[in-house]
Image 1: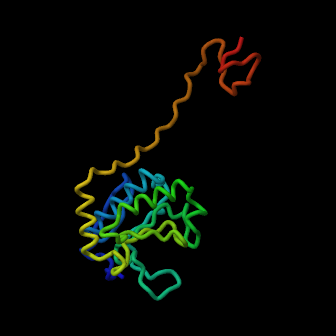
Image 2: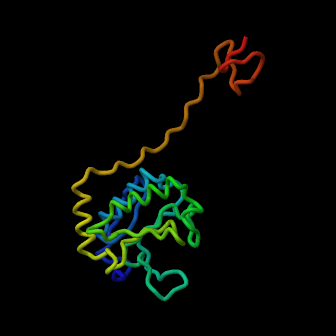
Image 3: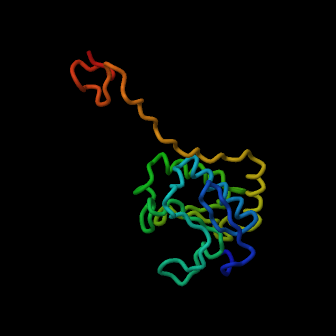
Amino acid sequence: GWPVIPSGDARLTVIEPVPGRRFTVLAGPVATVLDWLIRRFHAEVEPIDQGILDDYGYNYRKVRGSDSWSNHASGTAVDLNATKHPFKTRADQNFSPAQIAAVRQILAGATINGQHVVRWLDANDPMHFEINYMGRGGTPEAVAALAARLTSQPAVEARPEPTAPTAPGFPLPAGSYFGHKSGPGRSVSGYFS
């Protein structure tokens, strides 16, 4: 895997691909690729949920239940909407078929010479995305080539934050009511006589 980085190391940086969501990741090309991935996920799969702090990057720890270091410890992995897509579930248990297709389309854009640079753990950890292991397409050279290609493309804009729906003005005009169309009397589209 990628080298483990101790907490506070200068090789780590903070990215903010979605307003209000910051991720600590490995600086340089890895940061560029993960920033791109998170922006695309937010815009094309589902919003990175605001108000729930369940999105993570760097974490100096080992894989749960293992003696192996997590890619989080190298700053090369992110977890997105973790409470919606928990560990030890499959992607098809908490993503729609359209969302799974969108993730796969994004990942198809993260290849260099036919090698997948970004890996999704859809079989048992669908929140988790990581730069692939060295030797499986995630070499520093492949990540740098992908980052160079991504920076030459137009930026993916973040999904606009939803706005609250506007309510009809009150008091309502004479002859109208607020409620179901089958409301009082002979209701047609909210008006009655």
